[in-house]
Length: 150
Image 1 (cartoon, one colour):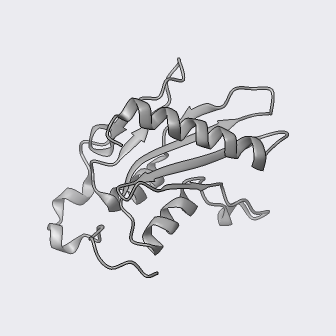
Image 2 (tube, rainbow, N blue to C red):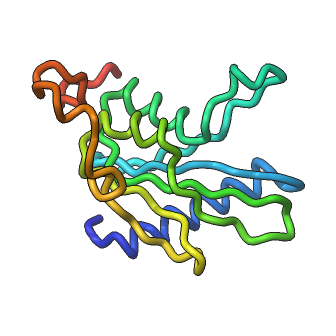
């Protein structure tokens, strides 16, 4: 699938469907990733009584992608305060952008905007002055195509 608009709409629809099932009442949020292998990965925040142990919504999908050596190409995150509100698109936070950069600076992230439209921006557009660029490419841990585990 090459059309970002069409892919974004499909990702949003899948995320909302999951959100409504996983969080039928109250707050809800999830992230959905799309891979070069044409797979969708959905995850939720890891919440804990100890706030230091919590993880962002995107983390689980990224872990799945890394586990199976899949290349993430797109990321979309949604959240709502309760079941009566429309979910809002959330731009990946700084640490999630850092994690997503593992798959390259061309990963596309859906960004927050007043109209809640599905707009993707490459990580390189969100953070054009990435600190890691000062290091040689061979010293950076990044995605490399390889054999799947299963």
